[in-house]
Image (cartoon, rainbow, N blue to C red; front, side, top):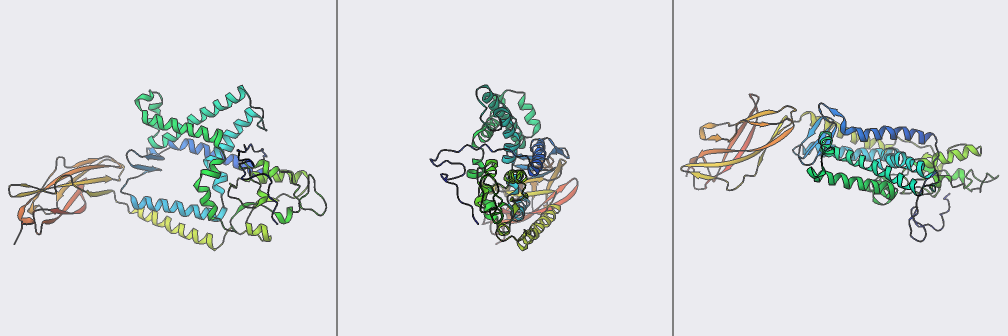
Amino acid sequence: MTAPALRGRVLPTLNADGTRRLIRPRLYVGRTYRWRRSLAIALMALFVGLPFVRVGGKPAVLLDVARREFTLFGTTFLPTDGVLLMLLLLTIFVFIIWMTALVGRAWCGYACPQTVYMEFLFRPIERLFDGPTGKDGRGVRRVLKYGVFAAISVVLGNVFLAYFVGTDALAAWVVRSPLEHPGPFVLMAVTSGLVFVDFAYFREQMCTIVCPYARLQSVLLDRRSLVVGYDARRGEPRSKGKPRPGNGDCIDCGACVAACPTGIDIRQGLQMECIACAQCVDACNFVMNRIKKPEGLIRYGSQEGFETGSPTRLLRPRVVAYALALAALLVTLFVVGASRQEAEITILRGAGEPFTRQQDKIVNQVRLRIDNHARAARSFRLELADSKGGRLVAPENPLRVRGEGHRIGSVFVISPESAFTGGERRVELLVHTEGEPLRMVPLRLLGPIEGGAP
């Protein structure tokens, strides 16, 4: 049985005339809310503290865009780690699909920073200044509230910046003039401004209008996914104000609507705006206890279960298939990561002409990039595997490369003109590190077509 639609409303966040409907959800503290609050406190500590945590002397998470490096729990990924990064992103994507099929939009309601900060930081501060109804915040109270919002936004803006520049650079910049680092300062200021606008004004519209992840999760749900729903078989037909014989348990009190942070009526069925936060569950359980009815009129379940009364089964073929795919990706990621070489040598396109003549010699410039995956700095010595047909000259040899860094250098291969056949010569570059041969790099050198044997 489907509940009747609300009159005079186009969208949950809009009034009938198209103006925005400001949503100030009523707080019902129940089991779900207390559990979410504990989780939110831990997550806020994690979000803020993660850039300051060090693993093996390196930040736990650092997205160094300028140097094109990504550090995750002590391991630094370089641009040459394309396969690893692809596997990592694919694993995250399959994990999202699996979690959505298993527990629905649990991320949105329990762990998304938008929900965590809005419902457990900014909203409690707003209730402190404006009162539970949101009508007491006037004059000085409003100024103080927005002042606190602005201060928190600046802190979060600096934390966001720390994920990209590291805490050492951030600590140095905080005590210096912004004119010394205008780029990062502008990034921090813009981020702080966006955070303030989001949590002070935009709010639930981030979930219902902007966020693509919400739409992605919505299309991944099926009729047996875990969702927050209303048991219409038990609740309809509704009474008004108090239970009446022959009617369902719903007394149409509106508590579920008043508690919803996105303004929907869960009794209308599954909706894209629902973030599965279960605040309506706590509100309904509060009312059911008051009228001496069993809890669970609004609860977690599946669409199929709410319609047929069948139990909700989390484990089903689709979930198992996703889990197997995820396990296969994790194993592949581990194997590829374990077989990762300590150094990568990449031959780059040379600058200028492909070769030059020096009397009866041909000189080829070879540009190469060395990526050192080891944590310690290392020296790489380059030489030709067969030096009889030429010699290698380098401005600097060996090349010193910092730990988990890279360096681009050039070497010159000088060969006799007679060594080229058909305008090319193939040689091998031997790379040594710490006195041990590391790998052989094949080279194709271009030369004059008229050279070589007839």
